[in-house]
Length: 103
Image 1 (tube, rainbow, N blue to C red):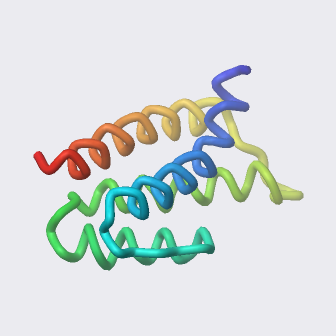
Image 2: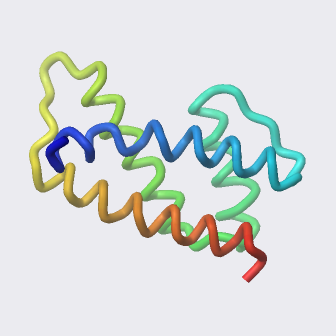
Image 3: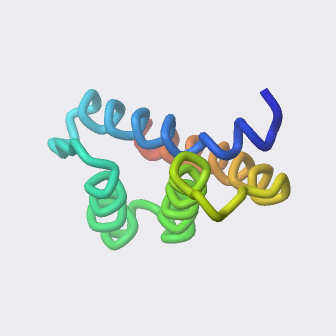
């Protein structure tokens, strides 16, 4: 899989992983829709000071890239955007794992 293809789909696995991790770890937060994941992340983590708001913005950006890749009729994801999305996704996952470990 090229960085372009991998980056374009980076948002979906992040959302699924975050939903599962939060439910499994007993945070008492249940979500079904992708929009609810984004909202919950902002409300319960970024605004509460548990997550640097830049990671919430990264998450929102990855979601937009994924939606453009999946549904964009007149838009295209360029490789530099895909690479940036991958870079941010890795940082995001590392930060979420740090929070869930209680560090």
